[in-house]
Image (tube, rainbow, N blue to C red; front, side, top):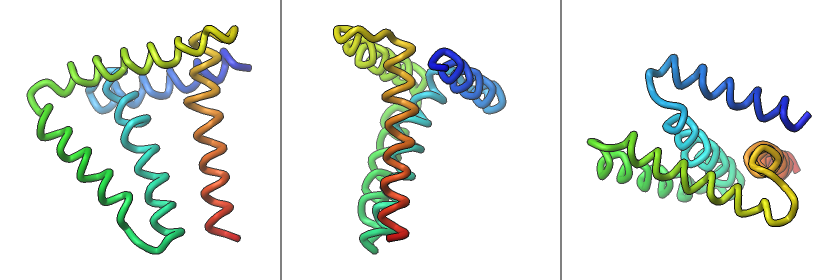
Length: 122
């Protein structure tokens, strides 16, 4: 199940990257560093009633895009390597890259979404 989940996510990201004519590393960073956190901050903003956190995150990303305009691909490659290193750091507890990726990049975000949605409906 872990390998199947990992493969499904990786294949989906590869297909999206191909359609957008960007690299796997770029779409990975855009999804996990921008889109998922931005969606969380939007849900938090809705919950607290102020569009502050999502606006701050959007401004940070606008700054990143402006600052890295000529080398965004290279910046994403650097950030992706850091992400791989972070996920591999958890190997010390008996995991591996695939397991760590599914737990940290799939299971935890799903749990965060569930928690945030519960906050909105309660």
